[in-house]
Image (cartoon, rainbow, N blue to C red; front, side, top):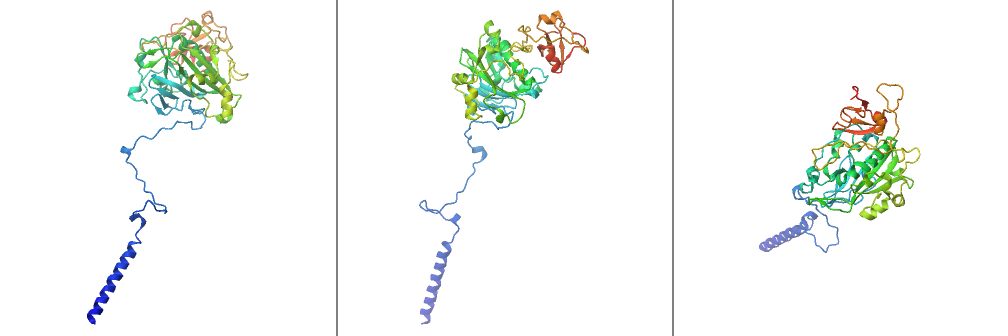
Length: 415
């Protein structure tokens, strides 16, 4: 009996132990058990971070404006540029652009312009855009011998407040091949008119580019058939998106890229069109940052070429054209000041240094439309017929009135 009782006790202990193991096994934490794919119970998901060195590049989304005043893309990204080699978004504080590797230049360039952007800094030097991959970069000498200017899209004259800002405009991604008559004359007239609007108390949102093809420079650079520009004009202020409405002034032009007197000698308003026509020709969508009704209204607006009353000079009352100092020859080492422009000028009187009364312009000044030559490096200007007139490397032509308003002063030695 004792032996039987001993066996019974042993069997009961073994059974109790096995039961305890089964119970404990069934209470394991969920993280230690395998889950069935057929289970209806929600399963915890463990996220495993890929090491940074192994991560693939994220899919780029079209970049849009921050929505803040003065953002270069406040009114929209016309081609939804992102990371594609032929629609690559490049953003700088000075401007934003869509770069086209196959064309060796920008699809479009967009920037904001206000009074604080205008200063006295002289011109920079052309350079490759180091924000682009090496195989996409255009170099200044790539234009050599082509007969076309390295035509700024965001102008040097719109970024003269600091050395850094002006230098940024000289990256080659900001250039399109432009015929000299276009770049140096009628295109420059519109650039000067835009700066006049800013000096009159406005701020501008500008986008421009080229379209079509009339050949190539080497195997790298497309030469556009025409160059276009769209300008939204607002009185200086804040809450820009909220202030733009169907009455906002919009200037749109499309200019032939031809080196002819008919192009160079024309007024810029000879080439006025509307944004809808440029959209049709390019496939871009402008003003996408605005409500649809406002966007559609602005697309159809065809400007008169005149500033509204109180909104700056009209096209019939231009300031003295500020012709660029550098003739964009195919040889980047040669800089030749162009002759003064001879279109109708403001009849601003000539004021001698220190004089308290206005004096009539000299015969020499009258012969050149009342222009002086401003040395943008030294901050002085020279009269027609004097030694340094038109002969300094860093300078530009303008009326004496505008030179004084910009803070320049007459050369003390009369030269």
